[in-house]
Length: 447
Image (tube, rainbow, N blue to C red; front, side, top):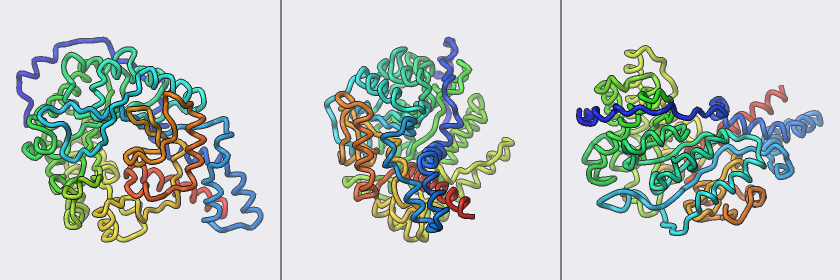
């Protein structure tokens, strides 16, 4: 689908070069796993070496020692890897109140921008790593308008500290009046909801006209980035896997490639890399049982769709003289390297929404370095607990970071528990990789 010529006449606006996030170290973001591993080795490595000298060669026992966070509260060099913030549960869709699979509980009470800044000021004072990943979602976070992307908004504040900022958005509120403000705010990436390339299905999932509105917003953002000579924000794509669209994932990849081919003016290595980073997210929620992909759907996906998508990207990249990279880790939530069981059992677990079952990890290694904040300011160990309103650790309006961390550490020993089976795949992958590296450290010292 081509963008109408009318829209192309809009791109005459020139503005100042956007803020550069000079304090942000891209290497650190790409190695959040290494940040966690490094912290645990610095805290507990000497204990492991002492045990090995005593003759202890039990890898599982040594792993439990190395992965121990019990002394973390007394540690002066505390770290954060991820903060998730759901700014609002309000949505901006016209014609319906939310996407067909949205099952968020409405929260009317709101924390203010000043509440967030006050809490984050305290957190920054008590941690040593500012360039962590801060993800902002909703509802629709763009409803915060200037409080989000204005000169004194949340994004600009976080950017000034050197933090990586991402927002998840349908981008329907993006227009020529605010696109420059958003780019200039210092935002690093945007994850756009783009579930399917079939216009009728897309509008059925979202609302009438959503397909065209989303495409225009993506095009608008890319073109203004070019005009402003900005590499940020990077644009990625979120796809919630349902029975409506999972079998259309291959068609979506074809569509994205054709979109680039049809619009050579936005073709670049960055645009191609970003389009490859399609994040397929397994569906959750009791009300969505009727939308869950079936065993057959997932079998087709892993045996036919993913190989097809990889081949299409390789063909396209070869044509553009670019190297292939690990598309599978983004597009395939059933990555078999993460699981202890064969693929048929993995698929069965996915059908039953047990995304964290039989993964190659003994515990949650990352929880002490992460928190998730709901619109009312309540803080939870992760998004999975926040969805279920389980184990609130405090509130950003009344509690400081140290209080919340202490409660988080007290709760850590009960993880994983019944609330963890639907843990987001990205968090599962991070924990699996942390455990792999901890075991590598142990074995290297046993050799």
